[in-house]
Structure formats: C-alpha cells, structure tokens
Length: 265
Ligand SMILES: NC(=O)c1ccc[n+]([C@@H]2O[C@H](COP(=O)([O-])OP(=O)(O)OC[C@H]3O[C@@H](n4cnc5c(N)ncnc54)[C@H](OP(=O)(O)O)[C@@H]3O)[C@@H](O)[C@H]2O)c1
Image 1: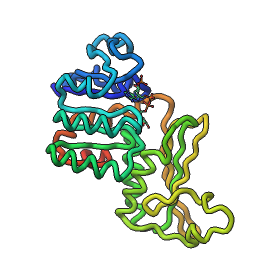
Image 2: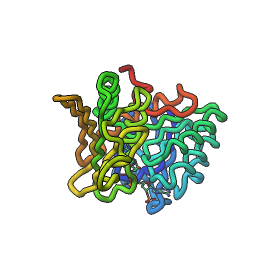
Image 3: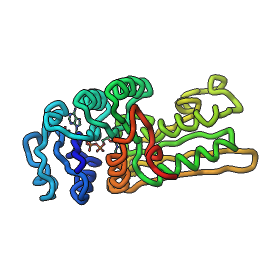
C-alpha cells in the first residue's frame, strides 16, 4: 500500500482525488489537510466510508503520520511551505497546485535532490492537456510564431494558469518564438499584447462561465493551427492523472514537470 497525505483534501480538486483514492486498492489516504474542517473525519465529510483519515489543520500536523507521497492541492501561498515540510519528513511530493514560479521550483529541486526524493509538478493532470502540450511541442518545431490564451473562472487567483506557464516553459525548450513586431514597439498599450512568459505571449481571461481551458494558436502566412483543451465543471478529469503521478513519483529524484515525464507517449 502506498501511503498518501493529501493537502487540500476538502477542496474542489482534492475532494474528487480523495474519492478517487478511495476507489483504488493500492493507495491509502493516511493524512488529509484543510483548515475549516480540521478534526473532522474526511470520509464522513465526503460521504465516502472507505476514507478513514482525520483532517488536520496544517501539513506539519498531518505529516506526523508517516506517508510515502505528499500531494499538494491547496493554494499558491501555502504550497511551498507544505512541500518543504513534506520533503523534510522524507516523502515524495506531487504538486497539483498552480502558481509556483520557476524560482520556487529551483528551490524545491535543490531540497528534493538533497533529500533524494522526487517531486512531480503537474499544472494540469488532465489527459487532454498532456496531449495538447505534446502536440504543441511538435508544432513549435515547424512553426516559429504562436501565442497562448488561458481561460479560467473569474475567482481564480493566479494568472497565468499553471497550464499556460508549463506550456510556455516547454515551448521555450523547443525554440524561442519569433515576433514580427516586438511587444516594446507596440503603438498604444503594450499590455494589450499580454504577458511575456519564457518568450511566449500569454493572455489570461478570467470570466464567469469558464472553468479551465487553454489554447495555443500557431500562425503562418495564410494558415493557422489552433490547439485547445476545455474542461467542464467537475474535477474528474484530474483524478486519473493525479493517481498516476502518485504511483510513479517514487521513481524520480528532484523536480520534474508535466505528467508526460511518467507517461509512455
Ligand atoms: N494540477 C491540476 O490538474 C489542477 C486541477 C484543479 C486545480 N488545480 C489547482 O489546485 C489548487 C486547488 O484548487 P481547488 O479548486 O481545489 O481549490 P479549493 O477548492 O479552494 O481547495 C483548496 C483546498 O486547500 C485547503 N487550503 C487552502 N489554503 C490552505 C492552507 N493555508 N492550509 C491548509 N489548507 C489550505 C482548503 O481548505 P481550507 O480552506 O478549509 O483550509 C481546501 O481543502 C489551485 O492552485 C488550482 O489552480 C490544479
């Protein structure tokens, strides 16, 4: 049995993952973190009798129970401290929380390597996103100009989304995108051209009516390629990918980004 501690187990994404873990026969949820329901039984809260963990108010407290893998699914402002605590307790870490910066990941990487533990960070566990990232990398090898649009609900705190950040970082490793008119030479409002992230222009929409989506548009003279992923209202698309990450993170050392690190594609 793989023992897992899940920070954010009572949240939108974390509660669906908790239910997903309850359906497995090889993963046991031994710890759960969430402030508002601290002290309560996670199983009773979620109506899932197969879950026996008691919710802790902090990661530090929950890590008092030994675990093999710590899953971070809270908020960007608490994520780094939680990950640090988990590595100090000897756990491998899966990060689902978005909003961590490249600098954060560099810090976490050196902690993880020092502890000889793996960290698998996936801005988006959905299979359609993993494929979008792969297809975009293929397209970028042949098409030098693209821009990214990230769509999310109006109360999402961080921008750009983890998915957009990950996509821009991946494409930067393929090539630096070219631009006909540099952003600095924009007449009017340069901000209208979006944020420059690892060389890519990224535009973040935050509106009611959206859940999470990501689009990349490649442009060439007289032709366009658009790759787009959209997810619906439930957090189900993220469960299978997160379970896979939990099962495979123990094979890694240091920070690895993207689920395809452990997928055979
Ligand atoms: N990688 C992916 O595929 C994926 C998919 C969906 C979401 N996400 C990301 O995952 C994160 C969580 O999203 P969500 O929609 O599930 O948010 P949410 O519904 O607000 O849930 C957040 C969870 O974290 C807990 N929490 C928040 N701050 C905490 C703190 N300081 N200490 C302890 N517990 C804390 C919350 O409980 P209390 O408030 O009671 O403490 C709750 O259980 C976001 O960054 C989101 O962008 C990633």
